[in-house]
Amino acid sequence: MLPRSARSISPPDVEAALGLRRNWRQFTLLVAINAFVGGMVGLERAVVPLLAEQEFGLTSKRAVLSFIVSFGLVKAFTNLAAGHWSERVGRKALLVAGWVAGLPVPFLLLWAPDWNWVTAANLLLGVNQGLCWSTTVVMKIDLVGPRRRGLAMGLNEFAGYGAVAVAAWACAFVAGSYGLRTSLFILGLTFAVVGLVLSAVFVRDTTGFARREAHARRGDGQATRSFGRVFLETSVTDRNLSTISQAGLVNNLNDGVSWGLFPLLFASAGLGLRQIGLLVAIYPAVWGLTQIGTGALSDRWGRKWPIAGGMWMQAVGLWIIASAPMTEPYAAWCGGSVLLGLGTALVYPTLLAAIGDRAHPAWRASAVGVYRLWRDLGYAVGAVLSGVIADRFGLQAAISFVAFLTFASGIICAVRMIEPATDRRELSAES
Image 1 (cartoon, rainbow, N blue to C red):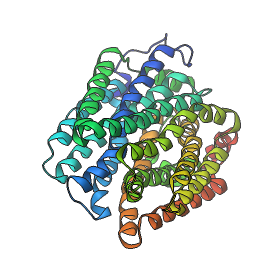
Image 2 (cartoon, helix red, strand yellow; image 1 turned 180 degrees about the vertical axis):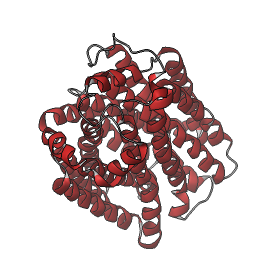
Image 3 (tube, rainbow, N blue to C red; image 1 turned 180 degrees about the horizontal axis):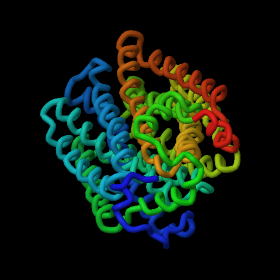
Image 4 (tube, helix red, strand yellow; image 1 turned 90 degrees about the horizontal axis):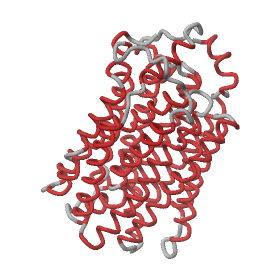
């Protein structure tokens, strides 16, 4: 059963009924809010690595990628807290708190006198992303029930990463006319204010839906879990949950590399700011747009092979980008970015849906938080690892090494995961 404090948020909601069609208004609102969440982080995808070199004179790739390390660490541990505390104080309160944390970010980027201010802005951005994105994920899972989880996560991640792509391109486009900092400030402040107003005024808490689903499954023997046990199972002992966590970590490891190194790689070929913005936007655009279909297909095909196959497709895309000839790289970079986006679209919503398949509603938010802890630690691990390799061996070597790790992660998924059709029966015996 849910913790007492979570049960006390509101009386049992007998009118609460699971399903995407029944709850389409709140679901659509949460999709829109997650687009603004994605927009906040999308602002930095093309512009901030260039800001590091052009305005602050940073030459070390490790120094340039330090903002991703700070972002990834804070976001990872905020995810963990968000999953745990949303079962105690409610989903909406954390969503609003995340937007409040995001409000200072555009001001810090506009006024930054040195790189430490940019790092500080990304600490707050990590809190914003951890609270807001985690909460919208959990709220959508609460609303739709088990039959449409893949579709729900596909729509959620479509909105978020579609907005990442649009914001990356728009910020680079505006920066071409008005400067790097001005573009970050105008768009960032707009996203933060609109997201806060929508969340504070129009969103309803969904804890009652999770409580209703937990009540319906109260006899399955899985409702009682301490947070420590949830953390251990999701991280290590549960066959599916721990495999999902490692895949999430590697996925965001290569996403962090694309965020930090792709703009520098593209700039090294002499591309202009707007060309870089367009190239950087291809990967999250393909990822975002195709997740609607891949999430829904995982409801039919199962979770295991879309995850494993998606990791392998990502690896191929990264290898193509890394091996492109610097004399005429544009076509290869476009093709590699498309493959990277398609592979990530297969993986991203399916991992979240697979967590929902395995975790009981009473501790599902905590399991999502633990998964997102490991997943977003991938940003920090990827930034540190690729920065060291790039400084020593070059940008292309760093990207190639990350491609190898991504391919190996797909092999782990193929060997270790159990399809959800059998995982409740087989894994319940292991628990």
